[in-house]
Length: 294
Image (cartoon, rainbow, N blue to C red; front, side):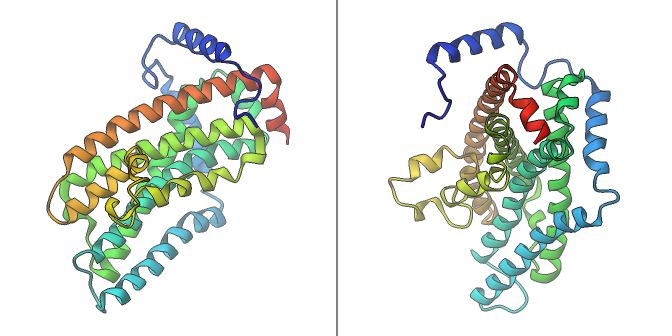
């Protein structure tokens, strides 16, 4: 089965040239209406105001993950009250992985909220641009991730005496790259939903997990087979978590952060182009109407 259906190279080139002609400004930095972005942001956040179930679900899984991983790590380290050495890596990696995952999930679920409420058609016939929608969705994802980061950081400090802030300002580029990769994964997931509808809905929770075994999240890159390492090197999260382990040892691996940033910018651009391509196909074939009324 061909991934893009009966689409030729000529169709790809035609789309790319037309898009570049109609979008001369840099992606994500074109003129956007701040009021519309704020309106979308409030629309996606007000959902949580009167839904304690949504709030509970938002908090429950990250906290449970930290409790399980934390006490397992204490058991393996042979300590009853604090962590030291490589055992810090597991807790730090678990917390930062949730930053990436919650960013991606926040973006994707924002889109799915419009699908579930049958509001998708109203969204795309309004003056709201694609860039404004993604700006609002990314803002939602980043803020949700920061809330979870703060909560998990407090729990880890209280229960395991692990302080993520020991990294100082070095933590900022780590978080920034996780936000970027989470955003790229979120846009990719929405692209697949636009193209294949709710049949691809499970990908909202699955796509980041597909990268996890190869991204050296909980173990050094050297643990992976040599045949897999070149692929892992192309995953931005690999460089983030390698940088995290170096940082916790007092060595700041800025080269890893540079690679992560360059890869993230590349993937963010490609994911947005893919969305625009699938979005144009969906409009031509009426897939948006079908998705918005399922």
